[in-house]
Length: 538
Image 1 (cartoon, rainbow, N blue to C red):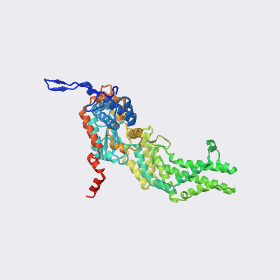
Image 2: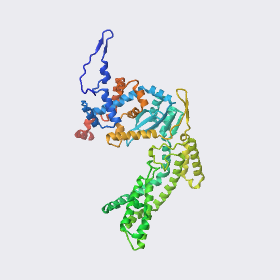
Image 3: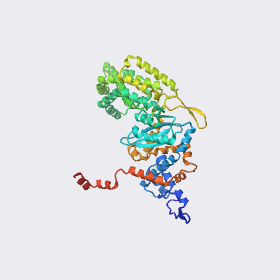
Image 4: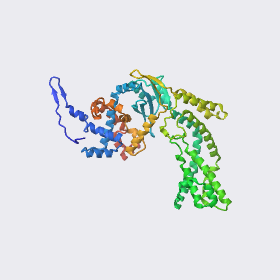
């Protein structure tokens, strides 16, 4: 990169005795075999694209400023080559990674996958203690048959983990048993709670959501707000501390009534932001929306009565009451609301017992749970189960299913600290994390990085075309990993120059094969309208 384009004249030495040709060492340490761009260009493209999230056009311009002319397609190809070099280097240092993890007393394996639409699943494995991404594969579906090769490769490279943490997918349980046999296998508390909550709350909640959507009340309230724009209503927050009802009783000021309606409509529509970032079933915005609508109806009804009793009228209040009449008179909605409120109360008690995703916390999807001893959590969950079992109103199918789920996963929920011995002989206790948030956060960060450089929030196309080992790039942010990876070299360029070019070429051929969905000759043929017409008429 410090030179730009140049022609290299190489002298090859020949040994008469051995009949061996010796190529010059210098050029092969700068440029890969059969490649027109140096290792420094490859590393620059990889860092700019994956670490700094630059676009291909920006990288192209940066290289042009350094007198390096390169096409966008070549940049994409060299970016793939960067991942391949990193993947091969990672495989070469597997033994040293294993030694490093043994220094920590072993490793706790977190396994999870992500997909988008009809894309393949990107499955990644990560060590909780060191933070190293250990291995990645792309599989068509998340089933045991496809997960087994990932676990087998991890076992071969790094040995058995101390424990494994996954979500509740049955495929993980089957694959782990097949590869590792009897091993500590824990499930994520957050996933466990979410699945229980969905089983308990989904049916009535979906009914509320569908009825609210069918009523088109949100659109109607937004229409009312657009009417307010014509009057240019200004709200001073200090006014909201006053008793509006008293003021209306005293003055019957139409502008004041409009302000009340304006505030309450915004309050109702803001229900979609009422959650704490956990998602359903922890957050229930449609239920909150319905409850706020009912509160607004009561308030407006009271205002209307005050006005009528004093010989006044307000058209806006009457219109809003008319908008809400259908929902207020819907008895099914009332039943669903009462049902989900009762079930949500039980579900929130379980959240309190498990001490995770608490209703008054706003940690969202990054919630790792409260720092409480596992014995204390287990004791609280036992108390919860006894309370539910003892009350007659909870003897229905939904609550009994909840209790069975807790009993079924009891051994995988409550992990005691595990005693391990470090490589220096020191005995320590390691506590597996209660959630699989390590990988959840990892995948969210991965998607966020992709969105930054592409401007596209959908991962489906990226997951189809990307190399499975692309997540290994995250390891470069870990200083311990970088030290191991460089293997005594000063730079990543020097480290890549040590990798056998035959292995790189072989792996790049596979990348090219995977990307080529339609054979070139067939692609030309199917795009010829007349030829396809003849073919279809055969």
